[in-house]
Image (cartoon, rainbow, N blue to C red):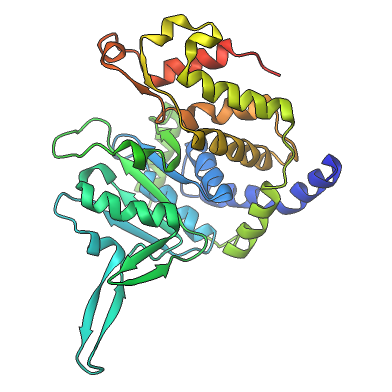
Length: 327
């Protein structure tokens, strides 16, 4: 398809993005990057992991976004005593009918907020894994499809590690993006304080719908990405596994495992969604750079030597982007 035709398609279908951002901005002050990254997840069907200290409006953002998109929202508070049945549902006996029926859990929603996901034990996390990967859950001996769209937004607290269970690599890899949520600026914090201490309540209008999102997703998948940019993506992901081949011999001693092929797929999709949010029908290297750290930071596993020298995966990824030739 011609790039001009795709551009027209993008302009036609991306109009709701500005209305959505405006609607969310009625409640959420600042945090533009977080809102944008969640929208990238929605436009590509990729799950999002938010990491930040409590009180940074992570839950409020997801809830506000679901209202503005007319979607069903469910929040699950993860605790050490949570059971898989508390999330996916269970089979109960109906005395009137004399038969067992499936009682669906909170995971049957469009936007599921898994609050403090690292507080739940492995059994619960693996139950969520099937939902995230297969978009279905098994209750008893019956498999149930989850609604469409279906997206998991998980939060974890980076500072309080007592009573937490680190997410296994297999589950971390299922998250398309890992977003570090930072503190607001001084000006933003003043606005937040004024807004949250006022007696008025804000009404969020539904300015989009799951149907509109489905149309936008089909346009995102058609956004043009040049072969040189595809090679650039593969070079970056390959460099996380073999940094020495790209002249980054100083990183060889620190990287234990590089990113999986899923990283290449997600980087391609996230870059297309990033272009869509800017009303553009083609991907530029800047789109790759913009989403690169969020796609790769939880996929590059460093060793103890890197930890001892306080080197983070983000620093490694930024060095890769500096070193690898841009098309």
